[in-house]
Image (cartoon, rainbow, N blue to C red; front, side, top):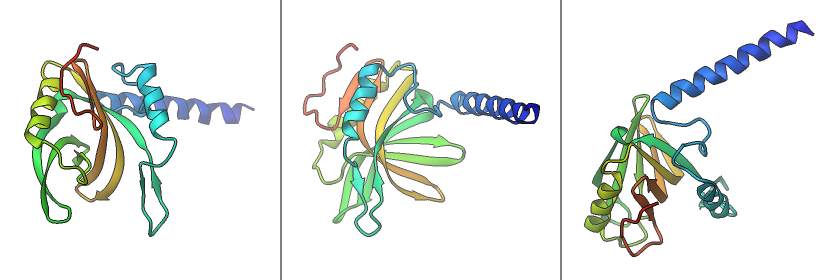
Length: 171
């Protein structure tokens, strides 16, 4: 019996160490445990995941939304030019973690008001110590990942890709 206890204790200690290491960079091993997120945010993510957010027809792979909570100082907001049925501007949030960049974009199928969204995202981030992004994985490269944003939450408010009103409201 004792020969099984030590590996279990080691595994538990390793998981605690791993969580602390990731948490110090602003990431959370468990995507729902950021202090900014509430039960309503968890319920929103579960509701959005009743069906896949993205399905790759060739492979049949399905991808679902998940929350990523980051320290605000680890992200930058910019406008990227992406090639989607020709060149297109996209509001983007970039995050650097473990020498890889994660780019969070919004759906290029929609003609967004790029300047208005960038301005709103900057207001959301201003003075907030944390940002949580509900997003779906799109693709990976040696440089990092690309994800599509469903929702953004900071202490200043929420942006949802379905919103056409961009007004900062208290949470």
